[in-house]
Image 1 (spheres, rainbow, N blue to C red):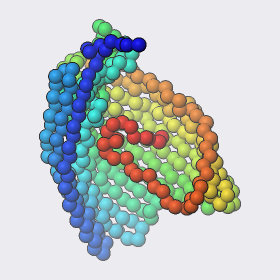
Image 2: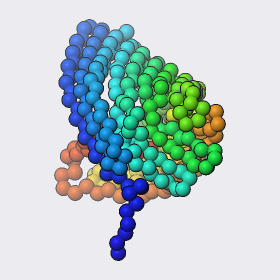
Image 3: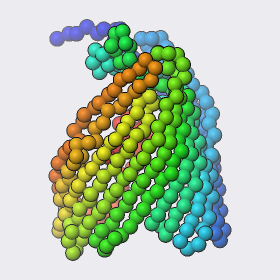
Length: 344
């Protein structure tokens, strides 16, 4: 059966990216001091060609990315560190494609090839480590042109359009602390807390055509507790929970998200097999709405994926099962396609 192609809703998009990079690194150690300094140079050449729009997007830029860290040992129990890092985030390939993705008749997502630029981040961190049990970091992070998705509601047509965009900036002050404790021989506890202030600014081109500034103060806590339930250590229970009060994603504010899980694992036959069982999102509180509210914009998005799950797994290792088979880390290019697998 033949079908007609609607050329107004179709496109051929060709994308080519070349990155040339050079690295240099220096390391020195003294009695109570250590220094690490590195520099990465990158030359990026990008060409994106949309046949339907007759639009060619070419970008050529050279970037310098230093990374410096100084560490000082105060005594046997306390270490201090100070670091600075500059990094880059390039637009994802899909964000450079102008093609419209129709979620439904009133919800459209699209790329933004003429205007998207890479984002550059500067981060300064002051760290303190105590007895390798308590880790505290205070940091300031500033991103110029941070990449995010901005929604715009048309109050006349009731159409919500979400487009990739560079925000003017985003910065964050934060203090993070992680504590690792062993209350008993059978109990390992890891707790992380964070208090932070976030602020961003973006141009609301499709509404009031002015800069909009948003901010929030947030708190995050995460706890993981591992219990050995058998004398031989083959039966374990892991209880996890994390909660965040408020955080910004572009013009969206996300609040009061609680995720929780409890899992069990049993190793069998000299660690050749393992049985696992896990119950996730115990309180059905992980899915919370994203809210965008400023000027003439007032919309919210609530996605409800299956988060409250009970899963059972069985793994059996054949052959020489004691070999260490490590999975390679995902490359930057794979991450930017949005196909990287994430575990929550």
